[in-house]
Image (tube, rainbow over all chains, first blue to last red; front, side, top):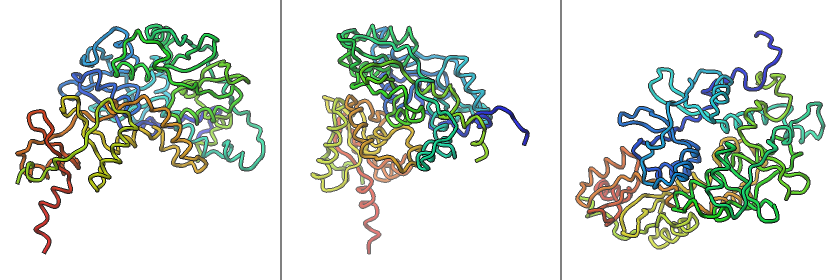
Length: 296
Length: 154
């Protein structure tokens, strides 16, 4: 095996080892309403749309549905009206790293995986799947957090903290703002959720794209106040927390981001998303870079 | 023999506006009053038209964290704490948000053999009987089984 000086944990892993094989599809003629149902039920951010001949025609993401809500489309509108195409894809035998580059380059959070004959969609690969994979590797690692704790010894590897990876700018809206303001904030900052604050500038809740599409499906108007649809309380972790602990919390709670607080839990100083964690391309500690994990 | 002869005309249904907690309660009360386990319920709108089905499996799937395969390897997590938090999180979700809307149905005059065939090929354990948009009954796989196979008992 050739000696490679610098490798990180994802080197050599193929797309097929990380991809999710369950692909949720809908015909293009399905109403937006049912598309939201599929997203909630399967906890996915986008649905693959197929044409009359069952060929993949494009996708609809939570962002597109949120835009339809903003534009005032009735929920029985066929999804083909908000379809986004063409499909961005990769192949099962591609390197995971090159797929991450495609995602990063195109500013998307997922790629569909076409089977080798390019005739059908075999799976989908998204940032949370990659983080999940990293997390498993980390747990299996000799230098892993869990094992270190059990041995009660410190090692020399500096572990990544939440504050190293988090985004310090947090998009916030006031609890009395309407969903129109919230959607505009989300679109402008290209983020998945906004923090909701009260008159005392205290964080009281979060409105995510998921909350918005649920509100849309339940027939709420975009004019309602943010506090009526927000989820509360705000889930946050300390900025000094280990990155792997924060990732664990996100994966467990099925959230794609966690807010970060300073010493005072009421003071939110940043936000950490699963995508940030995946883009960092390391599990939770520098030990990964030594490629030790690849020999498992 | 046709669906009309074997269908159960007493059935329980949910509304798409029910919360998941109300659905769970309905599963319990339906099982208690029918004296058998109910694994799936019909969802009907205010006109009693069938709009979907919700199974126990759908609710379980929804409550589970998506990346559950990772947690299978962990012995240091307490599931009860985890589920308490999850239940709090899904409070805003209604039956209509996770039900299956593409429902296979039969009519009262569907033949028993056709019912059995549909159940086997599509892996369905219960089929709503719909007559001119109105739900008139439900056929469970156990009904089909007992009607078809009674004669095997000597």
